[in-house]
Image (cartoon, rainbow, N blue to C red; front, side, top):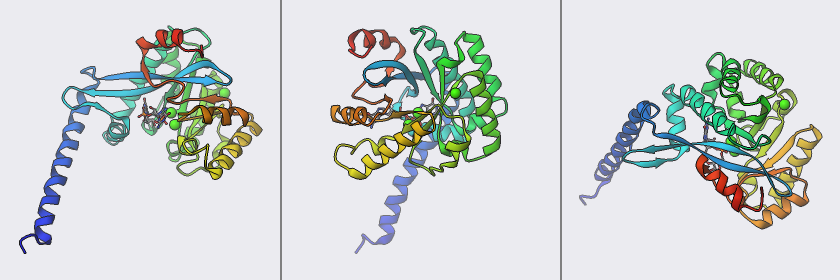
Length: 274
Ligand code: C2E
Ligand code: CA
Ligand code: CA
Ligand code: CA
C-alpha cells in the first residue's frame, strides 16, 4: 500500500532530475569545449560507383574529458539552442578545408551546415574567406544542408546558396525523404546532389516500398540534372541493387566508417576503392 502513485512520482522525478542535471553539466562544458580542444573531426569516404573514392564527409566529434565521446545528435541541438553552433560550424569548416588541401586534388570534402550558420550574417563571405585562407579550390568543397535548415528565412537562404553555387562550391540536399520533403526546394535551390536518407536504404533488399521510393528519387535527381548519393550503405546486396538502379554515389559503413584525418592515407592504401 506504500507503493502508491506518489512514491512512483517521487522516484521518477528524481531520475528526471539526474538526467536534467547531467544535461545542464554537458551544456556548461559545451561552452568551453572549443577553447579546450575537445572537438575533432572524422571523415567518412564518399564512393562513386562502380568503385572510386571521390571525397569525404566531415563529421564533428566531441570527446568530453569525463563523459567520453558524446554523439552529435546530443550536443549539436544543445549548441544550436545555446547560440554556439555558428562558431563551432566555422571551426569545422576551417578544419575540413585545411585537411582537404592535403588530399589528392580530385577529392572533395563535404561539410554540414546548421541553421545557425545561415541565420548569422555573412555566411557566403565566411566560406569564401575560409577557402581563400587555406587555399582550397571552391569546387572541392561541398556544403550539405537539410530541408529543415532551409525552412526559416527561405529567400535569404536561397540567395546565400545561389552565391555559393556561383563561387563554384557544390551544394547537397542532405537526408532527403525525411523532414518535410517539399519538392519546391528541388525546383528553386541550386543543388548538385541529393542524399537519400539511410531510412530508405536500410531495408532496401526486402522492402518494395523503399525500392520504389529510392528508384523514384534516383529518376527525379537525374531528371533535374543532379547526382544521387545513398547514405547508410551497410551490405553488398544494397550496393548491387543501387548500382543496378543507376545510383551515382554511396556512403556507409560497408564502404568505410568515419575516421580521423590521420587514418585516411592508410585507408586509401588498404582499400580496393582508391
Ligand atoms: P548526417 O549528416 O546524415 O551524417 C551521416 C551520419 O550517418 C553520421 O552520423 C554517420 O556516422 C552515420 N553513418 C554513416 N554510415 C552509416 C551506416 O552505414 N549506417 C548507419 N546506421 N549510420 C551511418 P553522426 O556522425 O553520428 O552524425 C549525426 C548527424 O550529426 C549528422 O547526420 C549531421 O546531421 C550532424 N552533424 C555531424 N557533424 C556535423 C557538423 O560538423 N555540423 C553540423 N551542422 N552537423 C553535423
Ligand atoms: Ca550530412
Ligand atoms: Ca553547383
Ligand atoms: Ca545525411
